[in-house]
Length: 212
Length: 212
DNA sequence: AGACACATCTAGACAGTGTCAAGTTACGCG
DNA sequence: CGCGTAACTTGACACTGTCTAGATGTGTCT
Image (cartoon, rainbow over all chains, first blue to last red; front, side, top):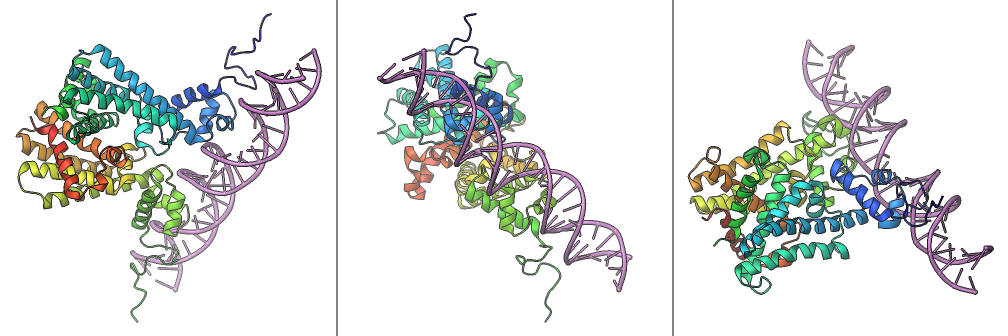
């Protein structure tokens, strides 16, 4: 038997040294978050799910705040991926691309409600954390860039363009937040509609902040 | 001396029966919420602040969820009051009145960030609770009514009008949520501006969802 | 190859949390 | 005046996050 190769064999075994605990904890944390929500999130439950002792996470993330901060940073990367998926499927013109990142924003929120709440409505993540700040700024940068292309002015030097950025962000963020809290479903029953009809409604709304 | 009238004397004494614990707990809970935020909210800390034992709240609100549900319901009443204050100060035309409730919405969010989060971004309140549902529907009803006046169609029978409602709500909600999480401050420095300039920016943005 | 430094993980303890059950106090009604 | 019952206290329980000390591998250097 050539067995027991030192590096990364079957990970979930009961080896004393897990070998890849950091990522495994993040995966477990995301699952816990999806199942139980942000509010009843438990660090010990995450450790149990990953098959390690309750003290193990501390060594990789410091404390619960650290783990949730890392998870939120991953969330922003995931958000960007959802936006890029919509961009790839959209027409190449500037407006369609801007709307696409809005639709991706909503897609992400619906698909990951607890993660969305962690990223935008929680005090637990440390916003001064490097990875968190970098990922969240990258997501915001996409918006700024596409609004600039749309209105033809740099938001950082043109107050009107910055209002367009803020209006666009507020609209898509409010839309996503109200949808994933179930407050829109009661009014429009979006989940009952075929995707193209849902998209048409969202596009109509997402166009409003920038149509002068 | 006519003293020691049975009902409601000096409330905060160390009488075994507090006499008015329900409201006192709500007041303490709101203060705790404002100071510590939704996430590190502690029922025992609320009881301590109100000067009663840790088990006392259960008798009035059942459990923590019950207390927070009642508090959220009060929050909606407070939201409506903030909107009505803006309405009273605004011009009587339909559009000004609609914008006024938007400004009141933002006012409320900025003044009560933790309560706002409890009302809109938390799973803790029981939305099927009678008082909660009534108060939140009253707040929403204001919006529907004013959008209907603005666009001249009943949102419950006209899909376009309902899109106007959703767009208006999403815009003001997203705006408030992003402002109170500090994400707009970095971009526009609203807190540095005089109120009329801030209002002008917000009005510009709040008009967009309904200007065809 | 052997041994040592170090990162990794476990195990126990601590204060704090929400909730439950049982006991104590006092209000109000007869 | 006495008694039922609502209001409140107290103690216990399981659970939480964090800290500490100890156990266990991993990798490296000679």
